[in-house]
Length: 417
Ligand SMILES: Cc1ncc(COP(=O)(O)O)c(C=O)c1O
Image (cartoon, rainbow, N blue to C red; front, top):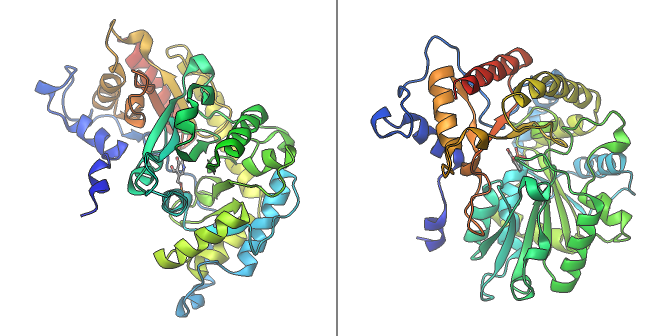
């Protein structure tokens, strides 16, 4: 067996399942071990969009099933790459990337974020490091381990406005860093990286030679009235700083959240042509070609913004109702972007009770049948703390009535604390 497999941790949702199933006797709270049955369950734990998939995307998928009789190429069709390149130019106000060399379709950003580390990391170089935000999307960690590297976590905390403190990494470690994952808008904090952060990151990349993987799968879920104020993208930042070749930078985007199609498995990577060439080689062997029907549906989705505006409107409405209600009981604010509320429950924790987020989550599920995620499940201990501890993540993915109902139940629970 590959020994690195032993380093993979259970996924946060598996940890959640175990936490909720824990018998009351050994549990850290006194609530019953089966959820309150008289209340309908509201699931705000998984970041899975629950808005309806636009019918035109379904129709494009169904109308292109004839393509199933042929093997698709790993590079995808010219039409799909050109559509994506045109979307990038429209969205970020930058020149159209070269669809032949700078863009590649992927089967959702998850598999691509994982496969990317396998492509760019030289595990035979001693002490390979992969910088990850903390809390973080767990794929980064598994990708680093499977590539023979170690993750190096940078805590993102309210005190530093949820940004990654690159200055905290010493030169000796930077020399071992081969890959840096950034997530903007961030999961879970929603933080969007600003141009100054990008400048710092590019300077460090030039100095130490590492590759930047910019996870931007939440980029289209934002609150900007004016589209010019939409979250800054990595390629956009590179252009603004004169890095027209996107050297050492690859962005990851996805239709899952933007177009409510997590089941379609469709996204793209774009950026440094030399890296994308190697990534295509890797993917050819891995067998990661996208189905022609999915390619056709993806073209339809990337070519339409109306449904994305409507999607944003629905999320905005939910944040407008839920955030002020919860802010009366939790330390929480509307994020820069994304569909998560990242709220501190520290005020209810007894002194020294670092993991009250778990008790909070469990009791909320058992007493109020609302499912959320303890922040500590999304983070690792680094620099002596778990930066997700005593936070909870609330995914506003259910419909507005359910989100408001859930917020009221959370408020009712908080009143008992
Ligand atoms: C930060 C982050 N990146 C990537 C993904 C993967 O999304 P997909 O594979 O559907 O594009 C997710 C999904 O929840 C996520 O939260």
